Length: 587
Image 1 (cartoon, rainbow, N blue to C red):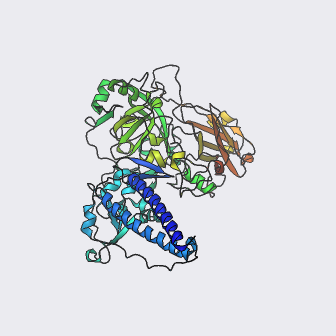
Image 2 (image 1 turned 135 degrees about the horizontal axis):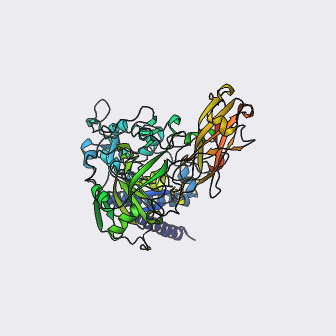
Image 3 (image 1 turned 135 degrees about the vertical axis):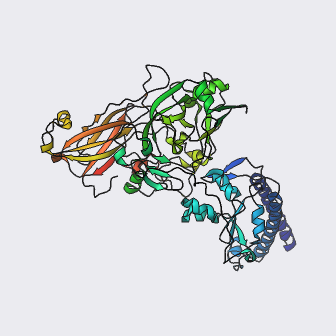
């Protein structure tokens, strides 16, 4: 083949390669800049889509520039090949070019990219970020929109959970340029002041064990877990954002969006007046309860490091969700087969969903609650209205309820699609495929030791424990709770005084729980925990106490955390181990 023929063939191949590349870029462009509101999955990441106006034009310009650069590379590679140098080698050996000059952005340009813009810009220090694609993935939902067009720092000073390296690393992925030096003061852009959304949060009981202040996340102290009904002020607090400041309970409105888009509204006063009232006793448990034990006994986990107190029990009063849906026009006997989920939306932006089967189950006891322990709901626990989804992880019992949506898909919120899920022990936190794991609904069997006390032989006379257990020597009395999701009963609690070598059964204590809102005398689903107690002669105690529970489906807790380890530290339910000496840490 002569040189001219060879060059012609090479250029033709180069043009064909470039054409294929341009088609691929056009496809990416169409996907990336589709109308806002649509989304698609690429690998394990959920990417938001943008409007075609504004950013579309700039993207086209960038694509054309990239195409020209690609053409230059192709031709250069062809020339190198003609000189006898392989393409890959030629590119690898090319001299390092100086980095492109960083883009300088005027502060007024940042301000223009506000909530009403097609793209969302923020800055931190003197660095500017386009966070448009991050908004749907933001753990706080669209709360991030409060900062667009301005500085992140005033908000991060409030939401201090952001002040850690992994958050900074995520932000850097969206870096687009620096603030023009003409707009800087002492090397930084002026941040201004923002309203503190937490300033009206209620005061909390000093006895609660606080894990974060803003938002408030505090667990019930062990000393209060011995009461069957947790005192309201000691009930654990799990807030993802601030507490909405609602003044008038009766006029607070709940909107129900039906599957066809029609909306029906009820005030809290309407709910009280129109529907039969029910009360049930139910335990709520955070999916992260005992997360710190998984961290200590296995490997580090992401999230608040709860002990045994991210669980509490109350008597809740309200109306059945099933009844309200029926009144709104939903066929609760035979719902539209396309309706698969029921979404809850809170007034502060939190969102979650449950399967429609649970929502309309006559024995499912899902309530719209306005009272807790015979008093109006406290603000920290959902005033003036919350959902109660007994037997399910507490993240589905949405507080400050403002909207319910019947849908063919589950909630798209961070807390449904990403946060409350479990992966295998081999999956790390860097790149999980969130779509492969279902959202947590019902919780597994759980138990914990909440009290250990010594009883001396000389104090056993006329002692109730001595009569119950026939004790005649120094003993150790252990108390705790056991709980299973899905309405399953606890049938047995096993306690070992010697690291699991020997076992004995604890006494399951009676309670006065209000069970079932279905009205059926045969319905006795267990929505609340069982408390238990056992006394062990001191001579039998060695090493660590262990406890494990079994439910009526014969589900039992695993002995260690390693088989159920997940990087989020959710559903940590291995045997609870408490050292005989309190100087050691429980696991």
